[in-house]
Length: 523
Image (cartoon, rainbow, N blue to C red; front, top):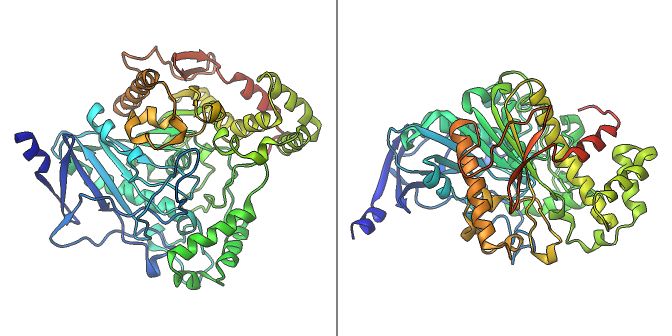
């Protein structure tokens, strides 16, 4: 009876913005739907995140806030089963906190930034619940919603009067990044009231969330807001345009929406904005490339460098880094596509030529085919996309950090998914249920169907505890894991997470050496 009363007991925390009422869930203090910035609606659409004005009385914090507007597939998709669910609303700038207790313990803090190709996802999804990390690691965990798709990745910097006091008088192109910065400032100013230490913050993310994390590291405030990063499958191989280069997409989106400028767009309901994003998908998709209709922009206001370079020098060079990828990242987007299954060698060689040049393309195809006996053209294509978008840029980050004596740990996730006759293999996103060690929350996800529960529990425990150790100490080692040495240029130790987990020297050496043959190009 006492336990039931404890679970039902309300929890009240006093913040500068106002009083919050959360509740106890599973022995943890949980606060959901906390506003960390002003609602970006009306005139604040396509403006940098502003401080929240606060509230009077006691605000209920027992339910998640709406997710950012995004496309929604009724019935889900064959890989993730969906990556965002209603309710959606453009008043979406909220975060969620899990903590062992809102006391003065000053625990390490883990901030999770969801991915989703810049167009989907939510910090309110059960798969990203902070419960396991808070309970198992004595951490304070924060997840957040931020603007995605057209509301987060479009910019109208040429508008008259668009100077933005929130970003030093300049108009930022990356509104999503101003949201994430606002959330981190909220953590700095408030997390001690939830039992967290604002001076021990790890920012972690996967896919687009990992690219966000690397982008944040390049902001002048970064070193004051967090000390460690975990980059899971960051697409560091993306080309990040300057504003002038990105303008073509902004103009194309305006045409898709049937609007002449931002003022007209501000008058449209958000479902119409999301509908227009489908048109931009169609216009920007290229054969053999991961579809990314919306992209970060090097605006010299919020993002000054390519995210692949932000952790190499300057203040962010001292940030502890854990980085990794899955062995078959690109299978996520291509392995189940019947159109790609019919790809020919000639098509794939032509695609390789766009990266390596026509003179090397056939030889590079053969090099890829040799590493995978019986490889079909689509298999070579998926390996190429995995390498150029994820694996090789991650290796280059690790190489550069190691060469300068900066701490970096590297991993590759190798466990193949049995789903869809094994065609997905170790696809993009497959490491997530292991990292969070919360397979019950993934029961609806086709990607994890058929995984041996014994393997799932063992590998989940190993990865989950490594992430906890890193967040607590900056070192992922724990007593249930083989010794994991930092990545160094003399041995290139990479932890291979599989049914048997072992450190391997130069695990992705073939890809690293092969991609040295790419023609040099600019950032």
